[in-house]
Amino acid sequence: MKKLIAVFGLTLSLYGCGGGSSSDNSPPPQEVQNSPPVANAGNDQNASTGTVVTLNGSASSDAEGDTLSYTWSLTSFPSGSNASLTNPTNVSPTFTADVDGTYVAQLIVNDGTVDSAADTVSVIAATANSAPVANAGNDQNASTGTVVTLNGSASSDADGDTLSYTWSLTSLPSGSSASLTSPTNVSPTFTADVDGTYVAQLIVNDGTVDSAADTVSVIAATANSAPVANAGNDQNASTGTVVTLNGSASSDADGDTLSYNWSLTSLPSGSSASLTSPTNVSPTFTADVDGTYVAQLIVNDGTVDSAADTVSVIAATANSAPVANAGNDQNASTGTVVTLNGSASSDADGDTLSYTWSLTSFPSGSNASLTNPTNVSPTFTVDVDGTYVAQLIVNDGTVDSAADTVSVIAATANSAPVANAGNDQNVMAGTTVYLDGSGSTDADGDGLLYSWSFVSKPTGSLSTFDDETTVNPGFTPDLDGSYVISLIVNDGIEDSEPDTLTVDAVQPSVKLFRESGFFDPVFSEVPLPYSSNSTVTANVTGIPTPTTYTLDTFRIVAEAQSFTIINLTATDGTGQVVPTISNLSEGLVLADGVEVEFELVSPLTGGATVTLNYGFEIQETGETFSARYTFTSN
Image (cartoon, rainbow, N blue to C red):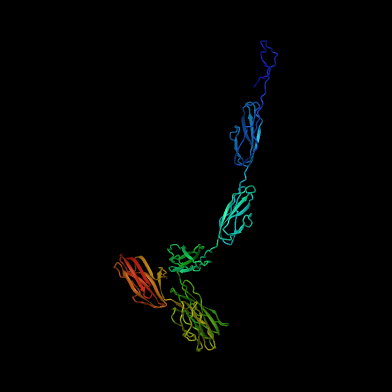
């Protein structure tokens, strides 16, 4: 652009002055040069990473005062940055400093004719220091008089700076003299010297700034000891029997009275077992199917619950192991044949027994051997003086018995006598028991002297013999329990080995057993009084066709005394059949120890449905038996 230069006091004219003629010798007008503008990108800046940065080119200028246009660009930014300018032709564009580092922005301005030289501005972005966060730990309960440890280790700093700790006790119970030890440690301590609430404050510093304060409360109280539940020892039980649990070994260190809370936490598949009186110390349940039952006990001392304790009860349809009885010890004359006798061996289930005898010990030099060692009564010859020990094991077809032994003492001179204290007895406590040592023997036929003694008695028993030197002494068991008694006899020369028997003193009772199983029936004890309600549908076949059907089979046995059956009934509520109870009758006396098996029988109903009721009462105890059946048969 060309400009005219005005000189003060002079006017240059292309046409000269006044009316004179023009002169072609005048100099041409001079052109004035345009000054380039000056860019100013503003002052260098510091920014927090992640914030928006505003640039400022408003200090840019032009000597002629021309209007400027702006061209910004980011010529450099940190590795990984995605920064870009918004409105790069504005005087003040912006960008986000998205990562730490240096951003360089360039500005060029234009006055409408020429660009300015470039100017740059640097923006240094850095992550700002974060204030740390104090964490004084969880509130605590403590026993008064104990040392409390605080814990500020959960305090944190977003920048990972190392922290320093400042603890203080801001509130104490009245009368407390508590003070912190090492209050600048991460975990100072103090003694909670009186009951009440202690408030501790923690402030942490990251080397630059303090955190906000955090507090923790410690409640101190004179401690109550939690009780300890003891659910008793694991048990084995016969399926169908009542199991009694026992929590009486549970305890409380403070001697507080305990309450009990039992539950069955696991049952075998198909079991409907449930606890009776689950808040009693000793609840019961019926193990109704084979398998493992788990019972849990929690006790409470009036303040807190104990940890749970459990007991396992394993129920199985029981096979009773047989009991071997190798007979009484014997004296024999050397050179004679000795006959052993295992006929007193027994099996509670009535299974047939097989016998296995062996000579487990014999005198040095003996060649004795058993004849027919699988018979009930094998023999052998005592060929030299000394003691021969024979062992018997019986088997019921399922399991072996424990071994029983018998000793045979052979001698050519005086034979040591053999004591026989008689059979074990079950009696009623408080009744006089007479023992019988008359089965004692002496191979030489010598007269015998008797010496009876108690090996053990129930704790607290004061029972004594009326004469411990007679063949038939008597004593009165004054307490329930087992009395183990020893007999030693003497033939005038030497004593026998001791022989023992057990007298179990019990309270009189009647026990009832019910048959279960079809192909391998067993009898399991059921409690008296007994009551049941069943529905039975039967299709009876056979040649000839039976006329009756047995609904259930039971066994009943009296213990410690005789009992009487009264109020015996067997009725049909519909009046269509006449049911019966086999082997029982009105006024029947159940003798002590005698087992009676009885059946609940009904005539066939020809398709009709009848209602059968069977029952009786034990006169001496008032216990009742009641069984009801809804019965339909062909």
